[in-house]
Length: 341
Image (cartoon, rainbow, N blue to C red; front, side, top):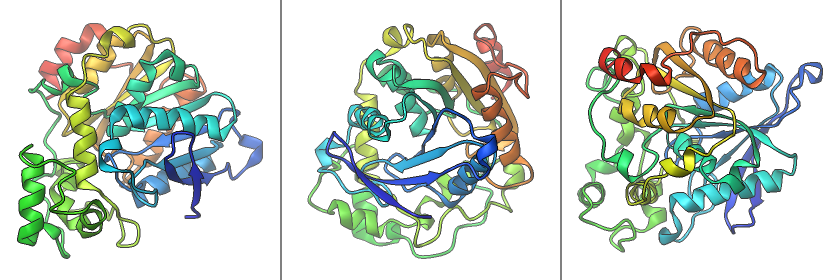
């Protein structure tokens, strides 16, 4: 994976990956930008393979690892905020300098994209938006609990082998207190780079399992290599906290005019209200695609999952008929929450 490094107008220096269409005769005219989940995590091997599939289907694909994640440079801890992430997206599109872009935001990347849609100055840079399995978009949404998807593989999958920083008492205590909100992410107890380097894929084993259906518990693919894996727990927690502390963006999202699509997984470990809140408040969502037989990580290389996700994405971006029913619609949200948890 060839890496470029771009200095954005915000000051962030981010790692950029470009997958041009392999057959120029099938090239789509609008550039495609991918926002990975995490937050503050490297792009997984599975994501890179999926982006390469999209490039083979004619998309001109760009992805960047958000500041502090993957091969991107670190920021001072207090600069990790969801608003900074949104500004970085706008600056990335400006730096790309190819006009409006189509954007796919996955998980926390879907949160970032949703908040960009709520800002008309930034939304004007976007041609179409695909929000896949989003986390909570703002503070009020983050406080909603309740329905989740069908059973995931959390607690069923074999334990991930390999070293874990959470087996080291100092790291275990510090990361645990951060998650509980009892220790600030910018604590001097563990430096940002130290925590990033100490954290391993095995530390995220249960989170990885929660991104797959229970039926796939014993065949979860390898998502990362030692060379590729990067996750900053402190920076990620700080961004999540700025989402939780933010006021409702619903009034702004209701003014969105950027054509959008929502993707929801059958075995999602996400709270269903996080996705349905976007559907309820964004009038520009034109279709929802409920993806059967997959968990939170919908393009995972198993069976035909990548092809099905790519078909849904391409159909929307090309304004073609959807491969799946438009479900749930806004009117169907109560029934969806009741019947698809």
